[in-house]
Length: 345
Image (cartoon, rainbow, N blue to C red; front, side, top):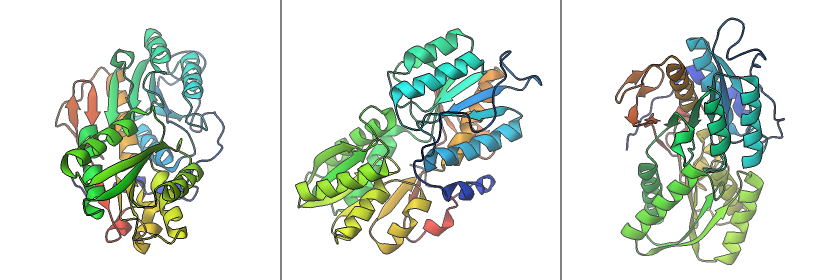
């Protein structure tokens, strides 16, 4: 797996967003731009690209939007960032329907559910709108044109399993906290991490697999319950960004820092305190802003009828991997107490 320490300078603005980290109760309305009512682009002929996260107000997706807006400015397209305030498939489908009605040129959506969105995305395609999934894909690939992601799911899942095992010394009970049981990427990472551990660390046992619905307070409660239900618990793997800091807080308050390993997918900004105190051992992450940038770059290329090729060098992103309709930026950081201050997001 590629290990890079490159930090994208163009996303320094993300620091401002991080002051408001965590899920908020943002309304289901666009926060950046508004499409015109009279066609596929605004009066100037500029492409209008809707960027729809799993939910708004979440640090990860807000930083992704920073990169997307930067790409929009550089590429001369309008990026409309809009989404639901909860990670709910029906609410996300309503947002997509709204963008279809308003006639945007391209819809880029991080799918909450791999199946629920397919019908409305097919409707968008039938209306002549290009469709890109990003961050998390759908199962029916005929209902989208491209999928933009940060890594190969199997590689990341196995890496998560290896890092957890390393800090657990290859033995003991562990639990996984995910976002929901339907999100494609989280489910894939959990599956590959579990299979990798089973194949390589027979003295490790997964005792629980719990969804927190991307709610940090719920992840905190889940961790408390896990520590009660499994007194020999030795590790927690969080595969959604609110989970690791919530677990670290619960572990610290229970006086079990150093006894229970805590690693997972999380931004350096929200894990810094716990990494430096030793409650969390490692954060594993890519730059969400780079993903947002690549998503808009790919959408613009799609609208222009251009093809992104395997190994292509993209400014502010680097070389990408292309597998059929999947575009991968292949950038993963292992973040520890020693290097966390090198990151700006």
